[in-house]
Length: 137
Length: 126
Image (tube, rainbow over all chains, first blue to last red; front, side, top):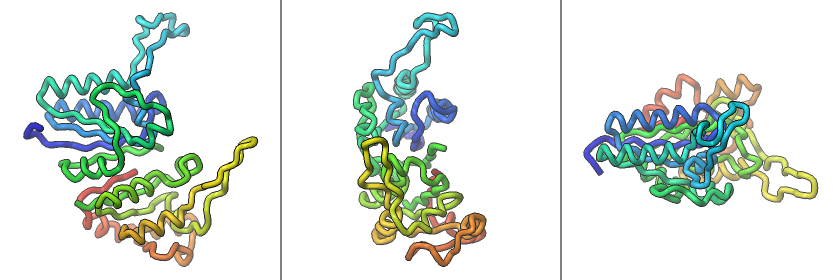
C-alpha cells in the first residue's frame, strides 16, 4: 500500500435504483483523484454493483442500438476505478458481503472484487483515516 | 477504535432479512472484536419499544417462520457489551413513553448526543 491516506466506504444501494449510487461512485473517483487509497464494503443491494453478468442493452425509445446506447454498467465503473488506482499507484479494494451475495445470486463478480463479511468492514474501518457509510433510504 | 452506529431508518427490509440489517451488522462486527455503540434515532426509536417479534409474512401458500425479533437482537447486542441508546425527543415526538423501553436501552437527549458523539472515534450514519 502506498503512503497515501486510506478511506473506507460502506454502501448499501443496488445499481439502477438511486442517484446515491452515482454519487457514491463519484466520491470514490474523487478520493482516488486526491490520492487516497480506497476500500469498499458493499452491503445488501450494493453487492450487485460488481456483478459480472451485467449487460448493456439497446433502447428503442431512444432509437439507439446497444452500441449506440452505451448503457452505463456499475461493474464497468468499478473496473475503471480499479484501473485508475493502479495507474496512480494507489490501492482500490472491494469486498462484497457474502451472505448478501448469496441472497441475490450475484456470485459472479469482476476480477479484483472479493467476498467477505462484517469483520472485513471493521478491519477496513479500523485501519482507515475515516469511514463513510451510505445507507439505503 | 470505537464506532457509533446511528440507525435512523427503521423497518428497512426487516421482513425480508428477518432482522434489522444494521443491528445484524453491528452484532457481527462485535463478534469480530469491534467496539461499537448503537444510537436509535428518528423512526428507529420504535425498535427500543418493540416487545414482540414482527408479524410473520404470508404470501399465497408461503408462510414466514422466522420473522424479525428485534427485542432479541437488541438484547443480544446489550448482552455482548454494545450500549444501545434512543433519542428522547424522537420518542416523545412519536408518542412513545420512555418507560416502555426495552431493558438496558438508555434514553439520551439531543443535547446529550454531543457527549455520545465525542466518546467515539467514528460515527456511522446509516
